[in-house]
Image (cartoon, rainbow, N blue to C red; front, side, top):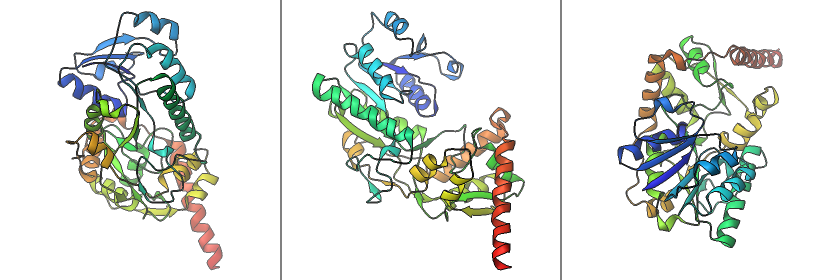
Length: 338
């Protein structure tokens, strides 16, 4: 198989890249070259900015692919460019959308690919929906061979998967745990959530590549395991070897008092219970099974980050904000009690 990835080094795509190269795929990566040093040998690098359409067109003029996948398209204009570049150069075009595009709030907790797409809380999700609409229009009217993939919360060894964190990543929450400081969990922590290790996601994605039955289809790729946010934070604390000091805070309150987009990431996503029906993926990729249990995956991630200080990015602003939120709740409770 001859494939081109636009990106190829991010949380989702890096594992796919590694597995494909191990399988002997003729893989091309089109990116700016910022993170290629971490890749195994074997990939053909096309170093360019995908937004420079004229340059990219010249670099790929003599190339044809079985699969082209864009991991960094976020608005319809990106897909319009991709269509112009690849409409005659690939047998399959794969777009990475998002499971946050599904109806929010859900009318049925069990999500299938037939669940309506609607998210009034998060512009990111609405943009992904618009991207899907554009691509399906090209499939219906022009025969453009599209496959839409919807990841949910996918993680790797470089970042601890969390609900509430600052703009600089997840380390500050782990640091608060290590210091026995209160850690914020949105809501009451009992809603269900699904996390998927990028190794497992890669298996499903590769099974869709070159798959004639995936053309014109939308498919989500997730684990079958669902856990509560309370369980997730307990798993993280256990992996760190500390006792969890949790403070539960309403998602609406967190959004109201933060500069972060918690309206989108919480109210439009993580505050809702999500359980996925993966029957469609398993029909298209019969041997797919997610084998990394969430407690195993998180423990692996925590161990990796503890051993790699370069991933321990502190976030003093977020830390201070957490203290203020916790203090405000304590003071409010004391005033009400008199």
